[in-house]
Image (cartoon, rainbow, N blue to C red; front, top):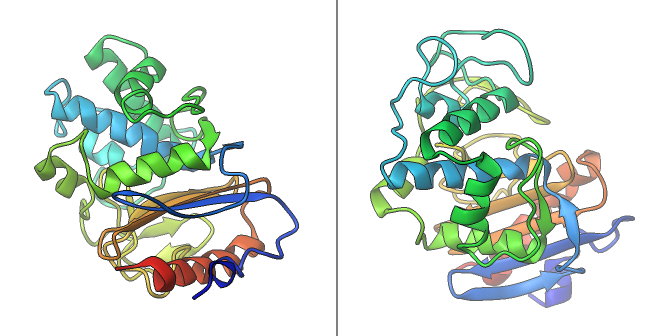
Length: 272
């Protein structure tokens, strides 16, 4: 498959996009202006979750410590299983009963980590992830659920880290990228209700969700996140690839059509 055909699904988009495909060793393909800064929207959650897990790895935070609403823990908050609503209000369910996608939950997680590590959360993210991975453009500011911005080059650095982790030990990383609280149903934003709306600890797990923003050929073990700014990062451990996508147009029908086709073309061209 030629480089041009790999990116044919996005070649005719009427807005700017930047794509970086990487394996554990380095960049294998790019498209667009990959050094340009775009908003990450909810892809920010991957940055925040990784920083929170570094605190767990260092023994400063424990996954089963109480955090969030009554009966909830750090683990519940990371896995969107605390029952907290999307952005405001009281809990919608008991912890561990439903997968309720929640910006509010990630913000509660950040507040808990901030108190545990003794520094503001933006500074913790910058120290433990942004600087540690050599990201040059990332600004972890605003909401820890959706406030960051940065380049596709830097987002791909996070993808490469998640292919071959150095910030987290293997046991914690494997736990974080496996399904937490299996069997919970819930709404995947943009794609409707999923009977098994699987998430790890901050990472959405592809599993067998349909419809989905990754490809038909994506491994069920694929994990990552997409954002309403028209952004995504997926990591497919079976293919040995990660792909960062950022753009100038908000998520919509164009993404629902283009992203799976793009993903399948990348896997066909570069997957191991």
